[in-house]
Image (cartoon, rainbow, N blue to C red; front, side, top):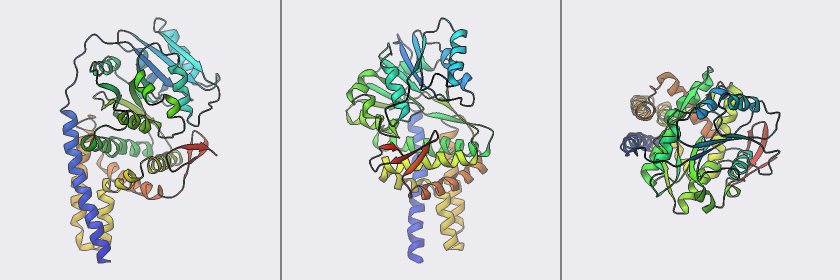
Length: 372
């Protein structure tokens, strides 16, 4: 028992150090120079769609209302009867001068349907600079102009945008938003600080066409569930410039119920375990409060560890959620979210199947997946 307690104490100490790293990493990110807008190149926006997300029309409208000098919008659906088609057509009628196109892809031959949609839109894209963005993303009017500004640096080939999670009405949605705005963003910032940006996160990624060509195109990503991570890693491995953008988007995660939320968490943890096994084990250091609770359960006299864990975790959460995203953490939700996240991490060690958009997939050990 004593040996176990000392082991957990060592893990907790490492977790508290990680919290300090989060603060340093957040500060380092904020010290980046923001490029000034210049003569900017045109942009092709690629939007894969499937069904009606909460706030879909407002999300898509934010792209129609962009202030960039020249851009086009490409949308892709699998089925012409998809309800998202009506939303796109309504916006096209409201913005007749905006160049946009809707593509019906049919059933995808790729395991990752999103990647197939992106591949089909890429073939039609007129511009070299691409912005690939999910349907649940909402942006400010100057977003495309700001992203294009970052690509005035010729060394940059790919930029992945951090996001501010906006919760729906359900408590499960609010808990997930707390995790995204603190725990998930913290991981990105610390990774950037320690090894540079060797990843991408899927909601919004900007890239040059030649960057995609250098890694083998979307065909290189079609068998991976975490195609965003593989995209960023492959680009970095190819010697291309990859950055964590200073442009933050809104991720409207909707009002998930308990079952949908748990399925999403399980999909994420199992995908992470398969694509980054050592990184997945390292996620244990992002859980100071659960570690402190386990330690106190073994040695009740060590209860001050809980106070320390809460203090360090709170400072780390503030540095990401408020400094960077401008959102004050919801402290009771944050603490419960940490416990839920730790439980999901434990469960993620078991099982190799996930459910995605109503279909069950098997995850292979190298991160590839296939329909079951």
